[in-house]
Structures are given as structure tokens and as C-alpha cells.
Length: 139
Image (cartoon, rainbow, N blue to C red; front, side):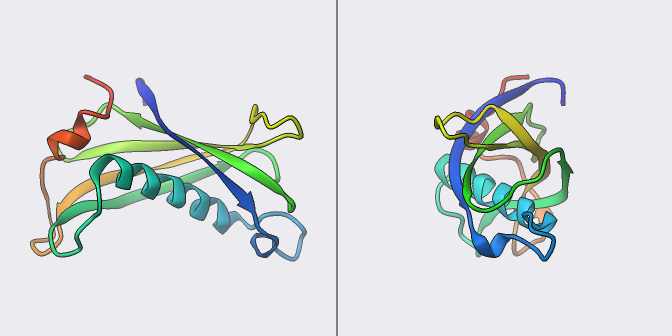
């Protein structure tokens, strides 16, 4: 993604149950952290999603694991949006560990998802809503 805009930041606790038998946060949990941040951004930007109407679905999801996370601790998930297309936008995330001083400088994972706006009943893509598109970077 060539141009991206920071659109949302949230902090989350690392829960004891997020860890696996090897003593670090399980890889699947990173996707949950990103999902929580993505949903918070989408709800703040687009409002409540009506399952009978139109809304976002993801068509790809990916994550690169850079450093381990362990319990206890807090993370900060920074969410970025790319330049939108007609009906889709690339949403990326940086997962950072919050240090003892409350700073989140070290990236532990990077990932994201391609989000497509759809009409749920028709199962077809539709243009991104104007009020949501206004939050995204200009072309």
C-alpha cells in the first residue's frame, strides 16, 4: 500500500487466556486483536452495521509476526487505511507492546485485511458509503 492514513488507535490488555502452551500469545489471537481494532474503527466511521442492509466483509487477512507477546501486558493497535477503491479499502494494523512508561514504540506484528462493502442480501459489492469514504485518504 503506497499511501496510508492513521485512522484509529486503541489499547487492549493481553489476557492470560491469549497464551498457548509455549508461553506466548497464540498466532490466531493476533487476528482477534486486529479484528477488534478494525471493528471499532468501522463502527466509529460507518456507524452500526445492519446485517439486513449493507456493510463490510473481509476478503483477505494476513499477519507478519515480528516479536513475541506474553502475558501480562497491554498492546496498542494502530489502524491505517489505504486509498479506497469503488467498493473496497485495504486496512492495515501495527500491534505494539505498551512499555512501563506507557509508550508503544516497538512493533510486534503487522497485518491487515482487504475490506469490501457489500449488500448482504444480494451478496454483491456496492460503493463505499460517502460518509465512510470521507474518513479515508484521498486518491
